[in-house]
Length: 156
Length: 113
Image (cartoon, rainbow over all chains, first blue to last red; front, side, top):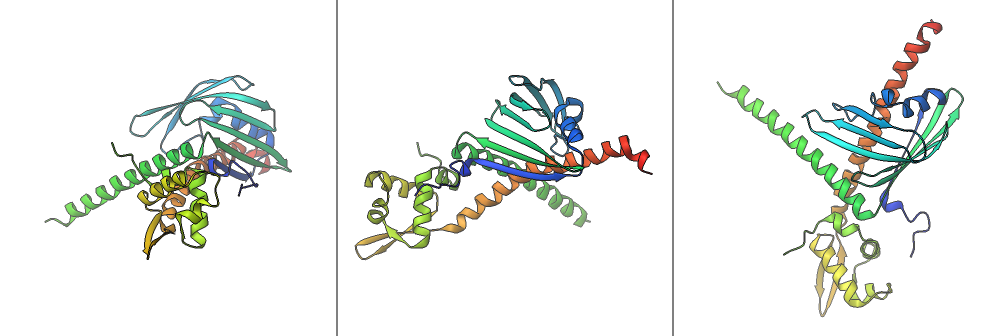
């Protein structure tokens, strides 16, 4: 009955991407705060990185500033750093995540994998649901706005 | 106080996921479901009740027997939201790609042309 493939399948997210840049540049962009602030996102967000001590046990504190002025604190601790190979960090703010990013040179390109492990399937579902609910809500507000604009336009 | 029940709570538990898998193939009654697990029939009954409350199971009465039938359409809601959440992380990689292109242009762009 046990799922032998992976007993974490119900509480993990796995992404991979071949980036069109040499590994040295990808590593730099991942590990230097002035770079990471430029892509961490999400869209419409800006980021302030107060601490980024890229070594095992080092702290990483990132504040995401939402478009509506809300700040989101993201505190993490780096657990393992192998230059040009691997970064493991533990996201200690909610939700608790162990993230593993691996880098592999492929000529002038870099193959990057990003694995995120949540504490439990229940936590993962909670996060997915909250995220979905937020998105849904956002879309609802957008729909409402569009609808109101339409109503206004339609009126004499 | 009534516990909040939804599809996420339903599938957060491994036994409940196994129950859904099992009855997805063929509707079964609680007793035959319970035979597949090393837990009490009461425990299985409770799981079935939660799954029913969450809308993932409907019970159909057939004579004296009550069959549990899976309602898999509810699961697509979860899949859609997991997808959205994944997209949230994929978009970081998109942004990283764009930023790498910009950096490459700044640093090496002039040499190439």
